[in-house]
Image (cartoon, rainbow, N blue to C red; front, side, top):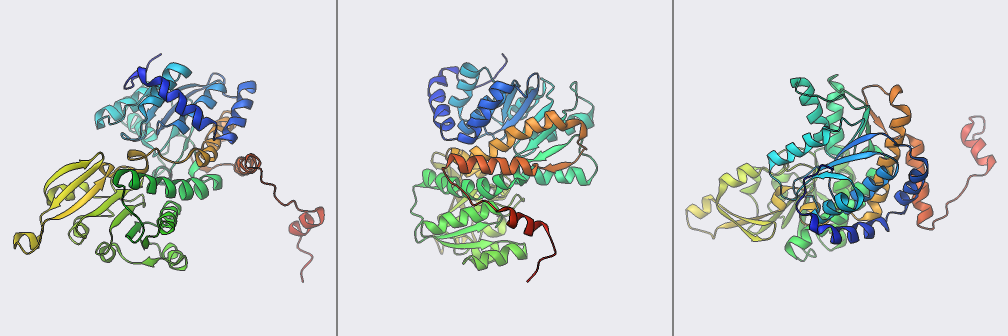
Length: 430
């Protein structure tokens, strides 16, 4: 085996945590049992650039049970759980190249290492793995063949891949797992909502009730964050450039303002847009003293950290993963006010993974079930796929929902033959 992790001695704790997550992921468990018997991925090499967490471990074990050879790297330098990496290598024979806190160069070297197995399938969370493949082919520095197809887990990654498709530069087919209803309606909304608040609370131990809480972006991730903050008693403001989403936020009971106005009141500011420089220099200057900044978008580009560094007289780590910036302001130069402090959580990276443990296993159960079944679908159908970004097949989406309901002990209504006929016909009206 080839691997690069922090410490193999962490395996015991990692094994216990992996087992805890597996027991709360019943749908993936059912798929794993079938994969163990049928071996639909036998002889397939899979490279995955994912958050190395207990839930990801459950997916990786499922794919290996299906016959695949796996090699994994991190999709975020601060999301790796080192004890999980140790257990995957030692207890499950899965090659991992990931160390929590790895620098940028190491991060990309680990991505390159995953590609050395010449994968037929890639699993991505943010499209860094796919981007590496496209860059290497463009520069003609590759010695591996193109994959048959891949999957993408995130909104951010899907945006990048659809841009490649529009430009006619996508080199191989991708299944957008993020677009599955059983992914974005639940993972993005309930998973991101809960885990983002979890990360903020773990990092700061701040009372949310009574605070002014600004959510930048009202996609499914932003909706979940706003919902959970409101549930904890915050006064939530939403900043959203899309008029339809902004209108939805208004109808959901939130105050909607431009960022430049909202930051004046906000005690806590969270970005979840997938875009760059959502919070930038002009906003830092308008913020309250002791404002807390966090990002729940995939990359650490939503908060303009370079501008924050330039504005700061000094910075220091006041708690683990909480950096205090003391800003240079006009008032301060005139000595009319005290220095203004802004607190950045998790270096501006995904706060739910940098400062907490990411999404709960119960919601990742559906997302990773889509991943596993999409891998099986690729093996069966890759020869018929074009160089496009595809939605998860509807049958897979519905099967995941059905299995999840069964695992929860929920029974749903069934249509009668007469009702089915009515919905298929046009003759009957009023």
